Image (tube, rainbow, N blue to C red; front, side, top):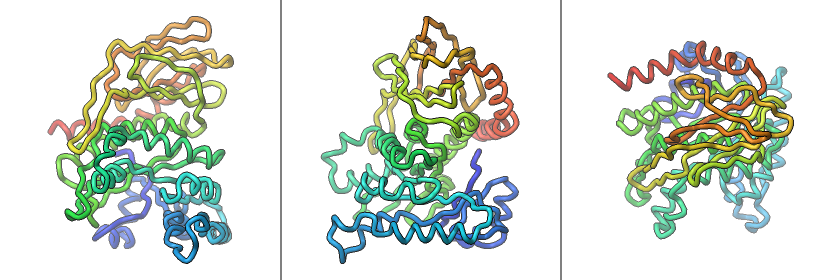
Length: 379
C-alpha cells in the first residue's frame, strides 16, 4: 500500500506485537522504516518522536491562569531535544507533534523546537465533535478546508523546516453519549491529501491502522474501511512518485485560474519546476457520506514565473504519468484538463528529463503495488 514508515503507535494486541521481535521483522520484510520514541541504533529509525501534543498538556496546567499556560512544556522540550542529540551520534531528525489547544498561537510556540514540525488536523474529529455538541453549526463543516487552513498557518510557523501532517482515518465507535461517527470517505481523504500538499506538507501519515480503543482504523474489514485503505494505497503511489519534486518544493502564490469550481494551488521546486494541485471544489460531506459533481471541459490558465520556460507539461496519477495538451501565449500557459472528477496533479517543467525519471521511479516502486490493489478490488 505504498507505506514507507510505521510511527510505532498501536493499540490492543498490535501494541505488544510491534514491541516484540515479530513486528519489527515484518516491517523490515516490507521495507518499512520506523519512528522511535527513544534512541536505539539497532532499529535504524528514520526519525525520533519527541513527544505528542504538548499543547494539550499546557491546557491541563490548571494551577496557572489560562493566559499563562501557553508554552508551559517548551523549555522541557528544548532540553529533551538536546538529550536525543547527545545520545544519537548520527543525529537523526526529531519530530514533534502538536494539537489544537490554544491554536494558532501554540503552533508558533512549538513549531521550531524540533527538526520536523508535525500537526494533526483531524477533520472528521471536528465534525464528530460539532455533531455531538453543536449540530446547528454543521454548515461550516461540509468540506475539509480545515486541513488546508491548519497546514498553511503551521507551515508559516515552521518554515524553513519541513512539515508533517497526520490525517484521520478512523471510524468513531463511541458509546451513544459521545456520538459515533462514520469513517472518512475516500473522497474526503483524497481532498485532504491534496490540501495538505498545497499547504506545504512534505510528509504525510494516517491515524491509524488499528481497530481498538473505540477507533476503528484502516485494518478493519468493513466495506467502508477496505475502500478507504484502497484509496490510501493509490494516493501513496501518486504522492511518492512526486516525491523527488515534493521534497524540494515550497508553496508559491502563482496565479492559476479556471472554472468556478476549480480550486488550485501551486508549489515551486527549485528554478525548473512548478506543480499545480487542483481539486474539484464542487463537493459536499455530511454524516451520510460525500457527494461530488465532476467539472467538465476544464481549461486551466497558469501565469508562469518569468524564469520558468516550460518545455514539458504532464500529470501524475496512481496509474503513472500522462502528458497533457497545453498551449503557450507569452507567460500564459493554458492546460487542458478535460473532466476533473476530484483531483489533478499537474507538473510544469523545463527539465526535459524529469518526466522519464519520475516514470522510472513509479515503474520500479509503485506500479506493481497499484496493480495488486486494483486486482484485489476486482476479485
